[in-house]
Image (cartoon, rainbow, N blue to C red; front, side, top):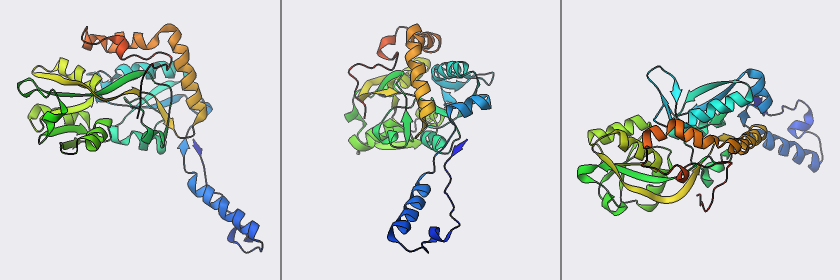
Length: 294
């Protein structure tokens, strides 16, 4: 585990006893730098030596990251995680995460990589380092067929369910403040709230609400795309360059075999069928055309 520890000085100079403005400023500068360097992460070599890579994924977000009836992690992100572990020559250790704690898990070193449908945003990029993207996504809104929401203006005065720490929460807070947001920590809680009628609609990535609607009769995605077209990418702790560079090279190399198309066919196509154009979601080699992120 790579840690940046504050350097403890035992000489009088560390306490400013020695005369000379330069020495005093130097000591204070070192202390300030040490205090600010608190990142915790494992380098690429340390991960390989340990024999396992810790990957944060969702456990309740079928078909992207979920735990099946046998207690095994499955889904689009897990399929990718398995390949990362294989090519690193280590075992994959999956750790369940909620949307709101993805950044914190990286900052505290609880995981090495986040593969939990992590949308790239400028705000998040200040706290973590994103690798190349592997999926395109926008926001969508799912609601009951009997009271289908087909435009954001229909949400005024109504309750919109969101999951804490998601781009949906941020988007509607900023652009539609008159919409009442009902917030939950976990996706399972959010979907159950929609089923129970505790909200009029639910918003998250359009890929996710579409998959859920296809599996739950009586619900449809009335707003298929709202907000910017964004990207989904792996994330590592801020400053973990060795791991970040390896993941980027891995994504570029996987493009030669169209790995993410194979991932889609294995994990998403059984759910989407012909309802979704695979190329509208899948990104190979980290190359995205005409995509604006925020």
